[in-house]
Structures are given as structure tokens and as C-alpha cells.
Image (cartoon, rainbow, N blue to C red):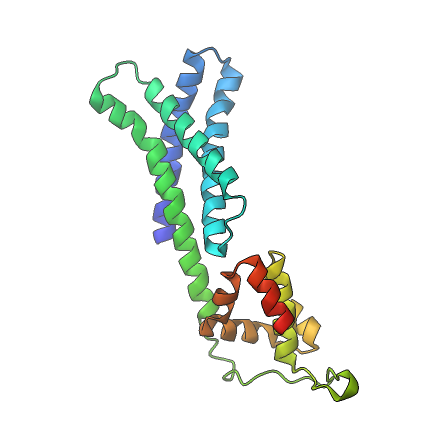
Length: 218
């Protein structure tokens, strides 16, 4: 329900912003075809920059944020300029009405991202009533070490692979973990357990250097 309402607000804000942006482009020299595309470029850039900033904040990655921030500032500036510039009379109330769509679009995208994140988190940690409580994974093929080194368990092999993939910006699926550890239908249960215990969140929020240290230690 929340996602639907937020998406509806975003669509309405984009429609109003599109009309103002097209009028602005036509008024200041664009031909009809270019004027029809111009608002999509501006609001599309703003939306992409907002999503990129949200993704980097969620992953804890600071490197390269200036590019997303530059695109965000440019997009919101041009969108506000186009919406306010399309007003025929510069009365305060008319300017406020014209400036509302891009601001509403900005907040709608942010709220929609947060709603989707919360829904994804709730789905990931929702227990499966048909499964038994998690008590580890067993496999028939042991990972024997050289010189009498202790063999890794299936979950330890999964965790080593998971840290490797997180370090390069990926989130492996349960099927990938099963292939690495030689298990069947256990990877998803392991991911749910890591998610429930907070182990995944703590690892994904670490800087790249600390992920490398964690991988070496595992």
C-alpha cells in the first residue's frame, strides 16, 4: 500500500514537472521534438542520482559519491529552474506551485526507495514455516586441509565465498553458496540466518580495506 501510494505521487509529480519543463524548453528556443524530450532528461538524471546516492549510503561506500552528488545538484537545479521559469507571472504563490512538482518528485523517489528497502528486508528475514530451525549445513564432501589442517565446514566455505563477493560489490545468492559448499537447498537458509543475526549487515557496511582483512582472517 505504501509503495503504491508513493509511486502514485511520483507519477503525478513527474507529469506536472514534465509539462512545466516542456513549456520552458519551448519558450526558450527548443523545437517541439526537443522540448518533448528535455524534461525527461532533467528529471531522469535527478531520479538516477537520487537512487545512486541511496544505494551508496546503504552499502557504506563513500568513494565516487561526488559524481552522484554533482548529478543530483545539477538535476534539481535545472528542474526547479524549468518549473519556475515556465510561470508567466512571478507571483510568490505561482512560484510556489511551480516549484512543488520537482521537490515532490525528489521526496517521492526517496520514500519509495525506503519503502522498497523495508519490504525487501522484511521478506528476507521472514521465517519459512515449512523449514526446520537452522542447525548448520552438512555435506558429504569434506574440504580437507594439507598437513593435518582442520577441514572447513560447509558454512565456513559459504562465508569465505560471500566475503569475497561482497568485497567486489556483489551479493551472492543461496544457489551460488550451495554450489561452492556442495550442499543442497541450504544456501538460502544460511543467508536468512546471517541476515537475522546481523552478520551480513555488519560485513556489507565495512570499508573495502576491512573486508580484505576479514577475508584473510576467514
